[in-house]
Length: 139
Image (cartoon, rainbow, N blue to C red; front, side, top):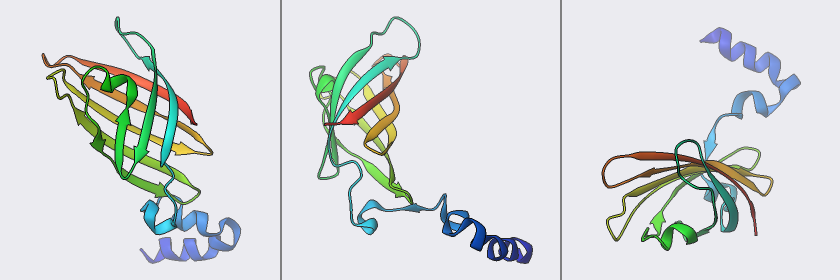
């Protein structure tokens, strides 16, 4: 343990705080900004199977995520968990259930420099899982 601390102290003038804090999650509210707040235009692409690519708008407001495209299929809005890493990269996770028994969406991703990317895992009522990836930009 002493060797690790000594190495961090010796190398910190070279790498600065990035060496010690690069992977330390910090709540977004603690940094005084919400990296996700607002609307994001996405292209959501299936990773396998016969599912189709679609465009979506994700809205993050008041710690609630809403997917416009998925809402049309009966998916509700839902609370998301957020963390922001030093350097302004925000991450999120959200699980949303269908109000019409169409299954469950699990969204996860991150945002930095006005761009967002991540994954959507859709679990159908019969247990079949469809994996999507998404990329987008802030409106």
